[in-house]
Image (cartoon, rainbow, N blue to C red; front, side):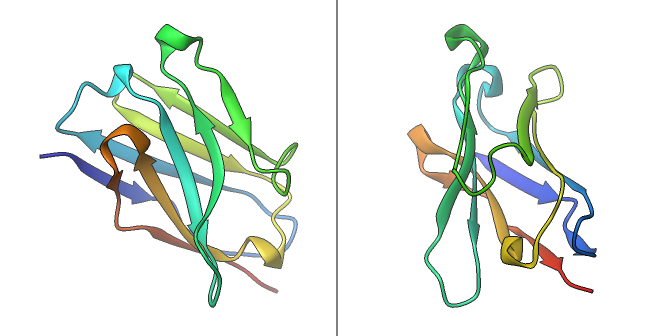
Length: 116
């Protein structure tokens, strides 16, 4: 059974930073492309960032809204996905979800609130 457990969300002031983590179990993490999504109140879930497996170069991609501010990374030795978020804006307020796209597997989400 695939399990994804996110952590690291919280309340942060505009301009601040947070790092989200997602620990994955139940599959060979290193072989899978991974993604972060988010869902803001009253809005549809949207793709934030993704990273391919090392076998495909650990290539990263981002939504235009977060390029230059967010960085996705992975530690295959720890079966963990990360999202470093800098220069946070109130528009980044959302529940952030970790995802394995090829398995349609999702975590429970972690809430990020950007507010003064």
